[in-house]
Amino acid sequence: MKIKLSFIKALLIAIITTIGFLIYVFINPELNSGYGGLFFLSISPAVLVGVVVYCYIIKFFDHAGLLAPHFIFRFSIPFLVTSLGIWIAVNSGDDPLIEAFQQYSFHDYISYCFNFALSALLPLAIVFAAITGMLEMGNNEVVQE
Image (tube, rainbow, N blue to C red; front, side, top):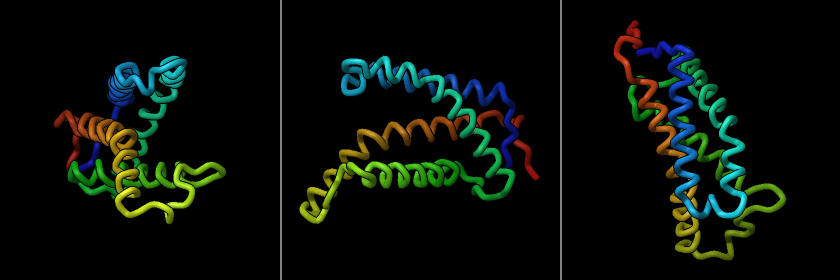
């Protein structure tokens, strides 16, 4: 099953996702304190463009035959790769969030991972699931070969 994607559909998906992103930012007091709301409002055009690019990347991978036709795999593979990239980026570099995890017990480390997952990865998962769901909507745009 291959996705046929028009620019209007990709733009509509990006607009809906960006509006959802802004609603999440302005509802969440941790992200909207001080100048945080203005910062996220200023990067919303980048989110819009990023979602359009992500839709076309998914389309490219779909036409290359690298994505499984089931919704779960279309959602989970990009989400897991992105999550792993975020986790590595957050915990490496000059100022990692977990400098020496050997000092933590297993329970503390798992607790830290779950807190990070709830605050950062859950909204990302919702966004990826929404984008994947919107990409697969419209039976007249799906071409079976």
